[in-house]
Length: 258
Image (cartoon, rainbow, N blue to C red):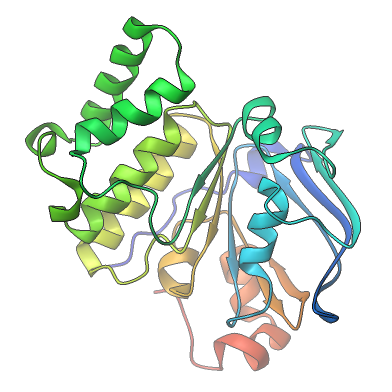
């Protein structure tokens, strides 16, 4: 049975955007990838992004994190125009965390050494580093895996490790790029639970981009469907799968999340 989200945070938080993209357009080699995009991400919500390959989902992540500058428009985080701010300043000032689809760990290091490496970058005091790592080890149930080299971990274990590494800096916003890709059903359910706990326990705003539409829709508050560089549907999971344009451009007529 699918994991169904029991509440929708947007009904509780109201109009409190933590990120806003205003009039964003992006071109690659004169080809328009994103066309005058406008949307808000609300504080402590889980927002999912769906759409075919090449519609701009990863580009939106790159825009928020500073890996890509828009040709036009503004990126607002916590009410501050950060369109021109460098990557490092965005991640530190606005507490961003990014979990890439591929990579993110050093495969010849053990699980614990990967955590230690990132903690030494972000946390100055040795005791604080120790406490943070101990918390993450318990939170993600890493105890049996601490001294295993990362290259020998399963796909789900690697994904959990990359998420844990992204949490060392105590992010307020976490970007997850295709977290469900190439994972089995039980591992996907485990990651859905991790994402829900980040929202409810850690009070983190989570943005998820994935091609696994059913798995994504079962753990988000709102979903955005992109096509040809534009938003064609935005709302609750039930609202977007009922949207006629989203059906014709992405879901098809028979899709459901049950």
